[in-house]
Length: 189
View (tube, rainbow, N blue to C red):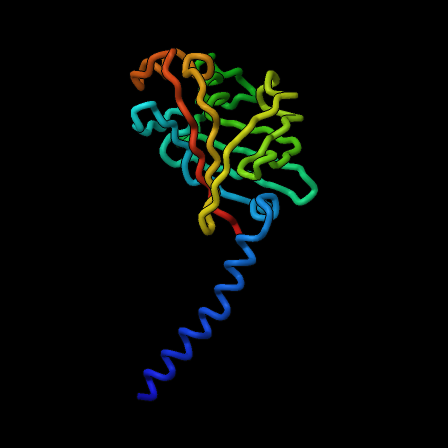
């Protein structure tokens, strides 16, 4: 009988402490909920038929996205496996293919961010990027949060405008095919 009472008290106490925390978390703004450092778990591209392909950064990319309270953000992601150079690039320029693979095997930009009017997504205002063409762009992203997971989804895009022809060919993706990227991150405490 005593065990039953202790168990009942434990359940009541856990509900007493978790419900207000969960309710408080749900009442926080999207900006307050995304502030922090997040480690990438996956970068998936979704085909129109729902098939998932890991065309951008492989099965196990590494990297972070950071949202600061002051409205600044930064993202850096490396491919799996990380492309390397056969020789020391500081003393011997790498061959074109090695350089190209290293360039496309890393992605980084920083800038400010704002929450969209609906409160369901974020706009990344790119101020600096590994890819010069991105500076000044505004990237709208949908966001969902599930516990310690942050999922960022891009609008659809035409594969041939973003990906190298040989990569599309190897994945059997048409240049006209519409893809959506889904990046999943886990909060780092």
